[in-house]
Length: 284
Image (cartoon, rainbow, N blue to C red; front, top):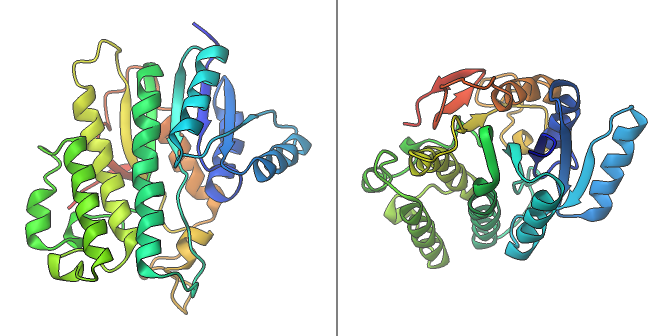
């Protein structure tokens, strides 16, 4: 077996970068900082080196299957497997940024959800026993209650498979295109919709992995809580809170994600759950 390795997607800034920093201290193995933009990823790597940290960099655009396959080849050649995969890459918008709704929906679904699906599909076969997969989401907005009643019934995470999730997102995109998504019970925010499916993805993948010969691979969705980051800023109110909650620093938020990603071998739970502040919370 090759050297242990942890992978963080979308790690050139914000929470992803902080996760790389903390893993350098908490994980006994190599840390791969990935970014779709090579220049920004390399710049982040050089800054970490100035702090005495030694992660590695590899380009990874999760919206491009060819890019994921190239990264897969790198992992197989250099390590033979993966121990930790943190899916952090996602689209973020600045508060007040004017982006047409359909374009927002395209970016959110294709990157946040389908990009994460493709990364997991391609890299899951290379997860080692006792591996940990974390899917970053937002447990404040990414809940089934944001959907209309009929859609809530369709998104039954105890029965749905990956095909069902993808089919529903395709239906959502069609509804947004024709401007009648609200009539069908879809949220107005594409980000909310994407986060709902990312949360569901953890449960679906866990169920599909049941019976796998590799032991003790845990897959969880993780809400790091509201943070002082660009991703949370769009939801921040004038009083500096997000839905009445004071945002934590990115450093504090990252600690909980790293805890989940480094659960000791043999740990059985949480698995297939939505986790915030080291506790499971309902998806409903």
